[in-house]
Length: 455
Image (cartoon, rainbow, N blue to C red; front, side):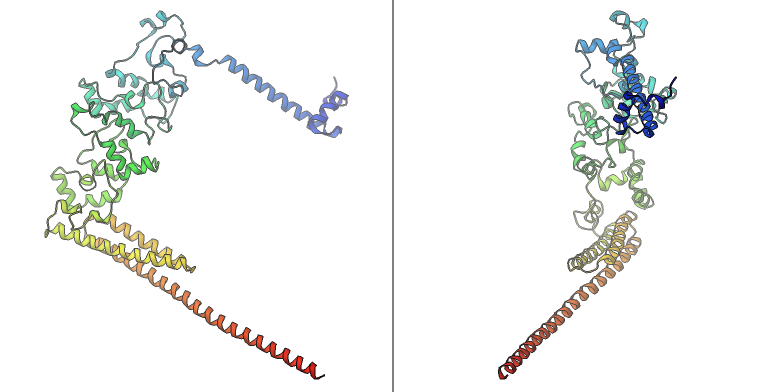
């Protein structure tokens, strides 16, 4: 048997060698052999892929449930081919039972085949929980997935009412849909962060549907106007809170008196800790008032501002405190401190911008102003202690930084005008020298002409 090297000596082999390498030199025969083998490997893999595709036909062809329902155009209205269960190979029989391999409708949908049909709404949590509460089963698809959703649901407002026979409440399919379920990370999902408010609003925004529960139905409209709603819905910030961030997901409950500050504190941790250590927090608890909500609201949370605190009628403090009492006076002091620091910061910022427009060095001023802004932010957070001394310490620190920034800005502005004056003076002197030089040259030229004329 001839070797590959010998075979390449033939005219046919030289032809392929030229195609593969662009050369007929036999020193390239090893390169050509490698390319031939690589091409053959690609062809084999491609053929294997085609065979695998032929051996593994679409689910709609092997699953008689899908095949029949698609042919008769009787698929559920919310059916979607991108459903996570369908993608994982879990078709109709995975939930409804039956034998999807049997094309005889009576046999495939018989009790003997395990067919259970459409579950009653009250049975849906248990229905979904057959798989989603089985940790061994769920680990096949997502090792870290939680398997306590059904248990949490049983302790939620929805779950408790369902157990008492109220089938108007939300169940799994109310939020996730029935046949088009997608992961919460998928933007098309009904429980994707940006879609959660609208999903909840389908029930909670329907005044007629919610009538028997005697609760408001304007939460969604209020939420859209809130600082949270604007961040989530307008700015598309998926880190901003939606309904489930405060009320929970499967264990959805209205935040209680003791839990409301902890719910807000998951994001606003310093505010929560400061407020928790105040006499006001203890008083609120005694009177069964919600800590954060009393001042900031719940669904329509406005963007906080210094105007919320103080002794004028528009402040939140004035809603409870009367003129002359301790809380009223404390609010006045706190507002004065904040206003003083905020005004100083604005003044320093204006001067910094002036330095920038003049083309002078504003880098050091920028760093100083960042520290001043940080002091202002800390002071605004420290308001939740209602301690005038602690707030004053931070505002004083900020004022020192602002004064430092203003002094540095003045130095730069003064340097600018000194440079301008110096430039003006030097320009004047240079101009005089040019004029003098010009006159001197003219004088020399006249002398030369008069000397030439005499000759």
